[in-house]
Image 1 (tube, rainbow, N blue to C red):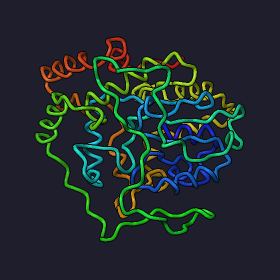
Image 2: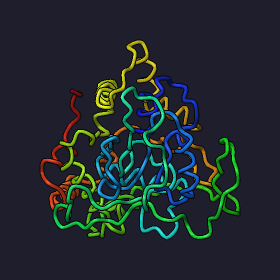
Image 3: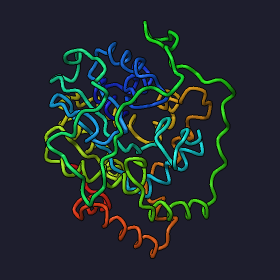
Length: 345
């Protein structure tokens, strides 16, 4: 989703900076917040900011459009497991978690896109740190569906021991600190049996989404909350399978919703640049590695299709997943999430 936003805003396949600089990850705890705010403060293009925080954990501003990316939860889990094999899980983590660049199509939180009418120009009212990074739940939001609690999952202080970082490549901006020691090699791929057992545990676990936002209850709560807000003009839900089935239609739909006019002659190159194959070819500028990690960035583009979870589970186990999902989310949202792809419009 970040890449599609970048292509629509800059209207060229040749981005002016690496994607991670153009679209900072606001709640990445490996990056000092002063560094991220300084990046945003220097930007004069239309901002598009990545976050893994669910909608009710961030302030909602009418000048911002919130894009929520949804992928089949089973595919998301498999992708997170493969992702952790490349760079390792986050410190003190409990299962797969969002540290480092997410796998293609994965992102439990929304992308926020600023709203100047022409799609370009200085951001409104300047940029400073949001108050504590988290506001009260908007619109009187109370307990989410089916009794799943609210994760207090906003922007907090940088990790212990990170002080003022040194000055880096961007004009006047600091570079994030690099931890000592050689980079850790990627883990060997998990066997099919190991992945199968882990997937069944993930489906069955009744994890608290306040501590496990990547658990099945956490994913379903986040998507259910976004689904309930889909009638709001500045909340857009995008499904990964729909991007696979109709990339051009989805990109044109998003451009219209974001108020971005794209010249007709520019569309073919922009659509090609957003394909899985082309993004994998350009992984060196599209995948921002965490400090101290040195791996082949193309590994993050392991698979561009859906169905990895279904390939691992039997029909009976898939029925168990659907029964569990029905306990966690409303039926209309699940029908949308699990249904076959359909044309845009």
